[in-house]
Each structure stands twice: as C-alpha cells, then as structure tokens.
Length: 430
Image (tube, rainbow, N blue to C red; front, side, top):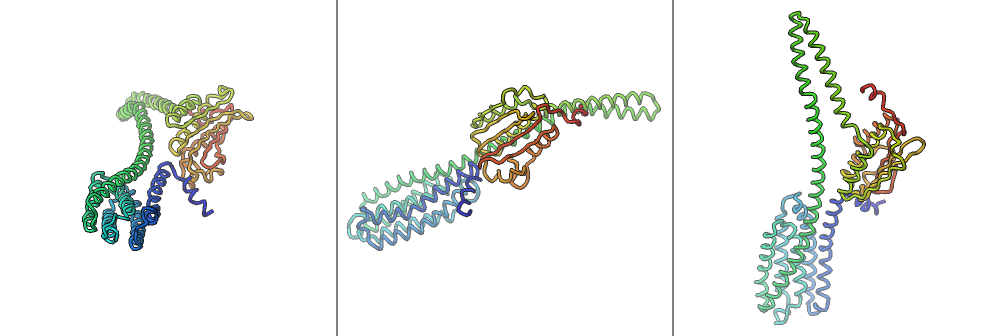
C-alpha cells in the first residue's frame, strides 16, 4: 500500500493543493536538472577544451547550487504565497554562491589566461540562470529582483577582466546571461503567480459561501423582527396595563389579557408562516435552480425527473426539494465537480431521488457505506446537512442513504413514499 500512498494523497487534494504541488515540483525539477545541464556543457562538443579542474569545480558548484536552490524554492514559494517571512539569508547565500562560483570558474580557466576563448561559457551561463531562478521567486518585488540580478552580473565583471576576457566577450556574456535570466525568472514567477491566483480564487469562493449564509441569517432575523417586534411591544404594554387594572380591581383587566392572548396567538401564527416559508421547497423549482447554479459554476448538470413527477404529493415535493437543495450546496461547497446528475424514478410505490457528482477528494468519501460520512464532515464525524435531511425524510416515512460509488464520486439517494403524508407533529402545529 506504500507505493500508492502518494496517489491517494493526490486524489485527496483539491484543485488549489494540486496546482501548488504541480508548481512546486516543476520548480524542483529545474533544480534536479541543473547538474545534468552542467555535465552536458562540460562534456559536450562545446566543452571539449574544458580542463579537468574546471569540470570538477563546475560539477561541485552545480551540486551545491542545487541544494541551495531546492531550499530557496521551498521557502521562497511560501513567502510568495504569504505564508512566511522573506528568506533573506538564503537569498544572500544564493547570490554569494553565484558570484563567487562564477568568478572562481573564470579565474581558474587556463584557456582564458592563455589567450584563448572562454571554453566554459555554456557552464557559466547555465549556473547563472539556474541559480537566479529561486531568487526571482523569493523576491516578490519585480524591481528588487531585477536590481539583484543586475548587481550579481556586475559583480562578475572584475573576475572577467582579471581573467583577461576581451571587452566584446564580456559584453556578449553579460547580455546573453541577462536575457536568459529574464526568461527563466519570468517563467518561475508566472508559475508562482498561478499558484497564488488559484488559492485566492478558492478563498473568494469560500468567502462567497460564508456571505451567502450570513445574508440568509440576516434576512431571517429581519423577517422575525418585522413579525414579532410590533406584537411583542403591544403584548408588553397591554400586560403592564392589565397588571395596573387588576391591582385597582378594575374588570377591564380581563379584557386586556384577552387581547394579549389574541395577539400572542396571532404572533404564533405569523411566526409559523415565516418558518414554513423557509422550510418549504418545491422539487421542480429546486431542480431548475440547481441546474442554473451548477451551470454558472461550470458544472454540467443532467436532470431526469422520470415520466410523471406530478404524481408526488405536495409534501413529497417539498421534502425531495430539500434533498436537491442540500445536495447542490454540498456540490458547490465541498467538491470540485465537473458533472452532476439528478435522477428521480418511481419504484415499488416509492420515489427514489439520486444526486451524484464527481470531483470529490477520495479522503472525503471513505466510510460512507455505513452512513457516517457527510461531504461536510471530516471522515470521522458526520456533518449536520445530511444528518438533518435523514431526519426530515424519516419523519415522512423515507430514508437517506449514501451508497458506495467510484473513487472521487459522491451519491445521495433519498427514498420517500409516493403519497408521503405530513408528520403528526406538523399537522398538529397547523
């Protein structure tokens, strides 16, 4: 099971985590390739004249730079994403290693001191480019990154002059390195920027969900205030008046208390209507709304309501509508689905509603065969959304199950009698 653990972790990650993993290992791959590039430059056709000491020094510097770049990429990307402070010490170490290493290679190259051309120019260029890549990510400011790159290149000029390179070679080497630095730095920063944008979009989506919940709570509190505020004030005043009249032995106290009773019953009725309005859901309206919302979120929604959904009672329409509403909320908030299906069929005098979607991390679907798992839960404790749906269906003679599906998928199955009656408590409340 060990070899499959990375694959399981990958499936358990959401899109932001997967994007960041992809970006990180793309940058790490650049570090791992660096020694291979240096080996190619010192042994390839362009490096036939490279001396053994220069080749050994180049490989040693490449390995040291790879280790440093790996650490700097890791810390630098965390800084770019706003998770830690800027790794100034590691940046300084990378710049010093780059300048010192390149200067040393220039000074020990015998071909330059003998008046020949620079034999290890490809090696020096690759070291300059690959060493600056993590620095460009660790420095969030583009201006600062450009100044550091320009300063590092200028610090190598004294070594070039001391090695006896012609002015034209110095200028060509600096110009080629500057162009390469710009391209590689832009590529690395764009990768880091992509990871940051995906995290920002995920955070914005979560904030949007929280705002929607807060707005619904505000609307509910406002409706309750509008319904109860005036009546409660009237009840308080009339109760106080009734107390004063009763103390004086006035018969009008009974009339005032009768009025208080009438207002209290009226308030109870109005509150019941408000709550019923929030509890009532129509299956057709909920399915239409779910399809519209899912399509707006980029989720392909397939709907099959069977041959005759009108055969359901109003109570069944309301209960199954709540199932669709809760399932749609789970799809949007707790998955990264690309497809969703809503199916309704009649079976043995019962209505069977199935809502299935993909894009669910595998870690969130473990253990659902026994009904413990909710897409809002953490794998060990059920969430409140599906638990409430199960209680609502049970009150009407139905049941909610979470059957096993393929990895990455999630299915809710609601079973309800076609002639589902209202529960006794609800009938009595009415």
